[in-house]
Length: 283
Length: 313
Image 1 (cartoon, helix red, strand yellow):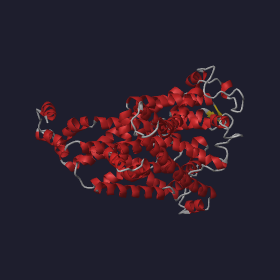
Image 2 (cartoon, one colour):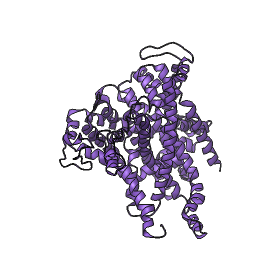
Image 3 (cartoon, each protein chain N blue to C red):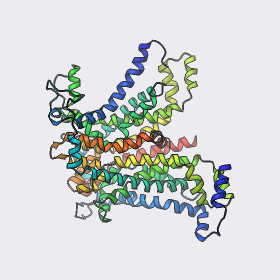
Image 4 (cartoon, rainbow over the protein chains, first blue to last red):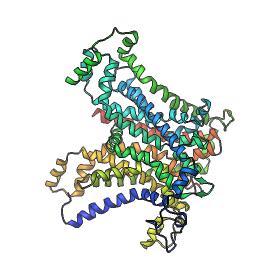
C-alpha cells in the first residue's frame, strides 16, 4: 500500500499503529498486573531501585479472593447484571415498536415525534439527575434497582429507536404488502414478517444498550445508597476507597472482573457492536 | 416472495373473524398510538417531567427534605458572581474543545491506519474498541493508579527514558490536572472516532484514490483533496455526537480528581453534583445543571439542521 522503501512502511504504518495499540491497551495490562501483585511489591515507589513495573515475580490471588469474600462484589455484579438485562429488554421492546411506527406508518406528528425522540438521545444524564432524584424519591423508588431499570431506558430507547428505524426502512415494503394481501393484519405482518428480518439490528441495539447500562454511573451513584444495592461501578468507587485509603490491589481486581461481562459479550458480537456504533452515527 | 408466501400460509391460513381490537389496529393512526405509547410514557415520565421539575426547582431555595420557596432568578444571579462556577464554565469549554480536537485528529489518523490491508486487522480493530466499551469508571481507576505520584509507572518510564528528572504530580498539580483528565478522555474517545471514521472511509470508492494517484497527486494531496471532503459529513456527525457527552462529562473527573485540586478540574456536572448532592442545595444544584442547557440546545439545533440538509440532498 505504501510506495517506496521498506523503512517508509515502518515509519508511516507499523510504528504509529503499534504506538496506538500500546497506548490504548496498556491500562488493561496494568489492571491485570496490579491485581496479581502482592502488596509489598505494589507499594514500592517508582524511584526505588528494585521497582519492576511490567511483571511480578510473586503473583498472588490474594486481592481477588479478598475482593470476592471480603466485600459485596459478587452482589454488585448480580445487581448490575439484573439492571442491565431488564432495562435492555424494556428498551428493545419500546424501541422496536416505536422504530417500526416511525419508519412505516403514516400519522400526524410523525416527524415531530421522531425529532423529539432524537433530541432525548442528546440529553445527558448530568442535566437531569437532581430533579430526577426528587422524582425517584416521590415514587418511593429510592435505593431500589427499579430506580435504574426505569430511568436507564431514557437514554437507551432513543438510541434503539433511531438504530432500528434505519433497519426497518431498509426492508422492502412489498414483503409486508404480500403478507397483507394474504390476509395478515398489520400487527401480524409486523410481528411475523418485519421483526424477524430486523433481528441483526435488534441484536446490535441490544448489545449496545447492554454495554451502555453496564457503564452508567451518575444515576446509580445518586439513586442508590445502601451497599447491598450498588452496581459494580458505584460499589468499587465507594466501598474500596475508605477515606483517603485506596485498596489498589482490590480496586484493580474489581475493575478487571467488573469489565469481564461486557468484554465477554463484546468478544462474541464484535461485528454487531460495530454495526450498532456506526449505525447510530449514520442515523 | 416464496418465503413470505410460506410464512403467511402457515400463520394466516385460517383467518378468524376480526375483533374490534384487530380492526382498531388496522387503522394506521391507532396502531401508531399503541406502538408509541410505551416510549412516550417512559420518556415523558423520566425526561420531560424531570426537565420541567428541574426548571421549577432552579427558581427555589429547596434543600434536601425542605421544599423551599420561590426565589426568582436568585440562584442564577449568585452563580454569575460565583468564581468557582466561572472556573467550572471555563474548564468545561477548554476540556471539550481540547479533547475533541485531539480525539478527532488521533481518531482520524488511527482510522487511516486501519483502512489498510494488513495481517490481524480484524483483531486490531476488535481490541482497539476496548477503551470505549469497558465501563469508564473502572478503566479510569487504572489511569488514576498510573498517575499516582509515588507509584506511577508513567513517571518511571519517562525517568528511564531520561525525559524527566523529578516526579510529576499528574493529578495533584493544578496546572497539570486538567491536562491529565483530558488525556484520559481522549484515550477513551479515540476508539469511537477511529471506528466511526473507518466506517466512513470504507464507503469511499478506492478508484477515486487511484485516479488521483495516476494524475500524480502525492499522498497528502490525495488525503486533503479526495478523502477529507468525502469524509466530512461523517466527521461532522461523529463530532456532534461526541461533543455532548464530553461537555456533560462527570464520571471521569469524579474518579480522577473529584474536581480538585482547588477546582482546577471542576466541570458543570461535577460542580452540580457537589452543590446538589454533596451540600444538598437542590435549587442551586439544579441551576448549575440547567446552565449547561443553552450550549446543549445549540448542538442539538446544529445537529438537526445538518441532518435535515443531508436528508434533503
